[in-house]
Amino acid sequence: MIEKRLLQVVSKGLKAVTKQTEKLIKAVDKLEKAQTVKKPQAKAKTTERAPAKSAPAKSAPVKSAPVKSTTVKSSSVKHIPAKKQATAQTDTDQIVKIIKGSKMGVDLATLRKKTSFGDTKIRNILSKACKQGKIKRSGRGIYVGA
Image (cartoon, rainbow, N blue to C red):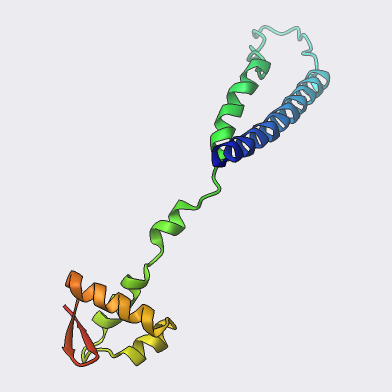
């Protein structure tokens, strides 16, 4: 079911991309027609100098448009912001950072104030961090960085 839904989303995206490429092709055709109409004819001068050579006019090939659509397909799938997930700090990292930043140690109440997490969540994070060796218990309810 998830695969079917994913295929539907992809097909909708492809249809949108094809519409955009068709619009771009029409716009390029209009620009080419406008450039050919506005191009002035060179006047022949009766001087001894050779006439200046003009560069051949570049025209956008129509067949290259489908190739462009394949590059747009990959860019239209950018719905997941990978950078935000990579830079996001986990709850454990946040609590360990607070504990390591204090010299005398931190108790549960100060962690609750600084993080606004619930008591059970903080206790679970503290027990896991102690087992991993990230923090140590210096006394009853007081935690210090390892």
